[in-house]
Image (cartoon, rainbow, N blue to C red; front, side):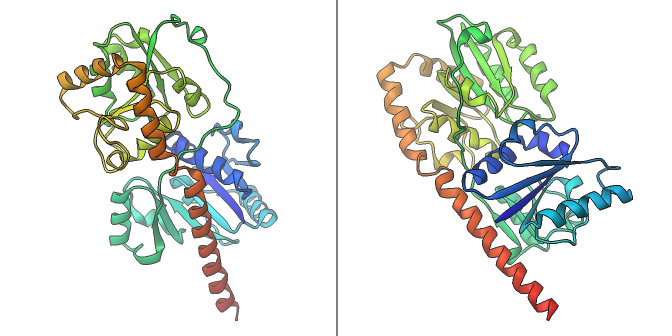
Length: 352
């Protein structure tokens, strides 16, 4: 199967982890892939996974003759079975060349901008309900499960690399840098956990805002901001536990990642975390807005014995190990194969 990913820069910044993990996981199943993206998008570290073509455009609409020819040449030479469009600029590129046209959608948007789309895929239940109610009902929209991919060849890091004392305790936070999803409450709670440092792994549109939040509660000096996904798992390996108090269920992939890495997880309840966390057995829930109880719980967790920690992380690992890409990615591929069959059948009918 051949899959072409069309990715615009702005969308990649917000959904870097989802896109990167899907590309990596599909590559392990020997799916032939190419990436077509705006020249500013930083995908250089994925070059070993698949070739990357870049476009130069006026608002990505490919108005010039040279850009139109370059796009036609790309599609003609690659002949993709599936075209996955990530973001509005990617959807604006007209496609009548070949392949099933799929758009990934994880926020509620104006569906008029999806006119060049055959199918919508999402892992957000709210978005799925919205698109089904507005023209993408039945087999034209799909809810895809989240997955965690264990990156290969991740070398170990040391506290010395991050200018941390050897005996320092580290708390890990991971997520897309966006306002009002839980970072504010996270920093308020962490500010009282003394003699502890923080690895904050992520990227996104509100990075400066997130850093300012840490600064306001005097956490900046004890925080190390780490781009993900290149180094996030390496950083997680040094942490005592992962603190993930996010409202957005999409960010719960970080929860799975921590459980898979045998790290304790502290989170709030959402539609995803409740499927994996059994409070006190596979991780810990904290109330969403009660700072006193959150701070109390964090201190309790830091004081657990090594034996108590080991029981919890082993339970968590057993819970999540069957929910890895070894189960989920074949489901993606099967769905794509079914869509390709439908596309070819429809094309044959039209040709006849």
